[in-house]
Length: 165
Image (cartoon, rainbow, N blue to C red; front, side, top):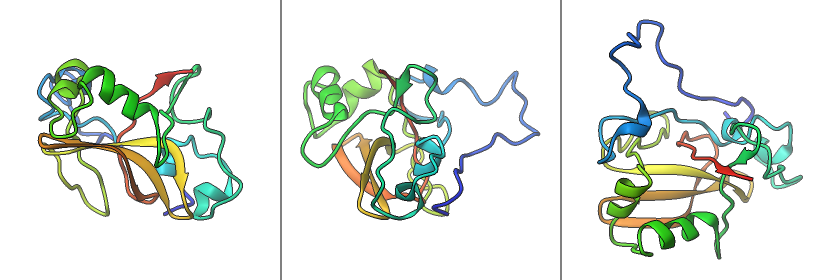
């Protein structure tokens, strides 16, 4: 749904002593997924039409699910903070995410287009920018490619990474 902020909830049967392991401790991007959010959830459930499958008004890029003083990376079709990250951490490589997994601890949590997809093979992270009525920008990585700015349907679920304001 476009109108309801959604995210993955850990089942009540989870044994937190043994599972899930911290998503930030994997050094190879496999086996640990973290949480996935639709774009409205990632944007902090802002009551704006852009979260509800429209183009205006645009959401406040400083409001998100991130903790106070943090936000989603900004990005659009011509530039973005994920591109800056890839340049700094992965030497700008677009044919491998090895530097991102080793130095940024990027996870291959996949995404949710109505069911889990690409876990253990692809990482998809929301950016704070809307692309038209029903899509938003994101960052996609896998072992053979890095897409510093891509788009996905706002109803799909992806991971988030926060940066300091």
